[in-house]
Image 1 (cartoon, rainbow, N blue to C red):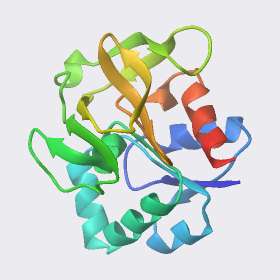
Image 2 (cartoon, rainbow, N blue to C red; image 1 turned 90 degrees about the horizontal axis):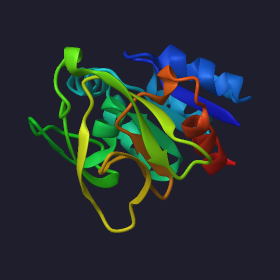
Image 3 (cartoon, one colour; image 1 turned 30 degrees about the vertical axis):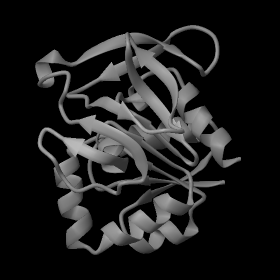
Length: 186
């Protein structure tokens, strides 16, 4: 199975290392034509508005939108923002494939970043979650499954072939989020 990690910005290399540790063949995706070879894609954290600028300048946006409608995709932090149907604080364009409303930087600025533990549907024990200028899911559409929560807030969700985390699972030693994504593809 060949997994791509969008490598335009953000900590894409941490996703690459985690996926390789789990046995996946990983391609760092920098050009739209690379999507054609993939079974699944990770859109990492970073700055969602910067991602949009890169994607729109290169004509990558429409090709990516087509890909995420057809194949398994995991978005983390900014990646979750790009996948959401509704984005606020401020509103911005997105791929619109995941029926959630999400608010950017909802937990505060960089200095309010934190590591938490949350309830998860991904096996035994709490899931470690690294929140860095994290977004917050404010509305779940029908059919969106909550896989993990931080307190009352849904922080890991799935709808069909699309999964999104408002935290950074690649910055934890806990591989369950990436393993669940690989399970979706297999």
